[in-house]
Image (cartoon, rainbow, N blue to C red; front, side):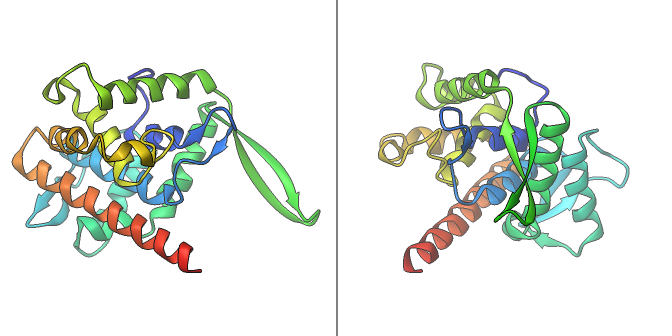
Length: 224
């Protein structure tokens, strides 16, 4: 993918930005998608391992050098053992906030201060590098639509598509196209955990947790 320095959670955050409307419109559950991306990258790097469905840090001193990923890794180390699906939702907005701050510091976003109703201070984050996001989206769509067989797609690119589909990220996988891509999405979910059987289980559990939380939130919004 373009700009290989971007972490998986950062890519997913940017892919949720609509580059025509210049705002987030991809999913109502962005915090869950970003957290799932961070968990997946830590698992792919071998820094979080699976112990019968529980996310376990692989070592006390290992880190990634990325403040977002390392912040989550520290949180897992300092907390009681939990299953992967629990970590998808637990304090997920802290990871979202950290990704937003990181992207702002690196110039992908621009912080704009304003006042709500002329009184309450607030900060919006405008997209600065539209071309980068468009390139990321085009690369992700090629992973989704081919022509490469799923087995030849990189594990990171496969994870981008698998998690985006799980979170119903319509800026990448519109609802009308999701059914037609179902088999490919399943293949990419398997590919994203290709390094080991345990990692494939992690990807399935993380993706399922995102689907469950997203579906529950959509149902609550519809009933409300």
